[in-house]
Image 1 (cartoon, helix red, strand yellow):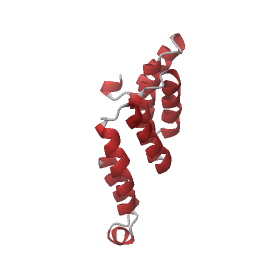
Image 2: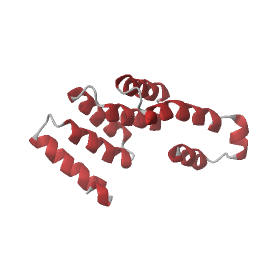
Image 3: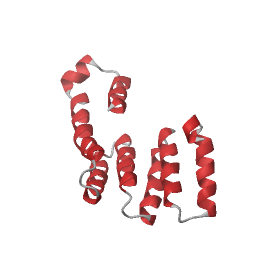
Image 4: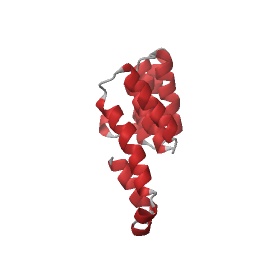
Length: 131
């Protein structure tokens, strides 16, 4: 269902998989991705936490939890998660990218010169989402 864009349906399916097998880390992780796609960042973080609790070396869960934290404005928490992913997988290029690029974009879009030319918050969100 997720691949067809039915994120709510996918969440239901992953929830059923979790009910049947509460130790299924991938179901928590995938449900977190679906929640993230619905902008339920807190719910996504809770599911990534569960996945990490079941599988402490789950690099993708650290990466995506960092992305969700970044979406909530928790840059420090995001960077900590990117660092955790890199500690587990030192060649994880996307974690380096996110750790470096997102803080830079936040600095740029909050700079007074940028704000004077692009005062609308939608512009800022579009730039961060595209990165």
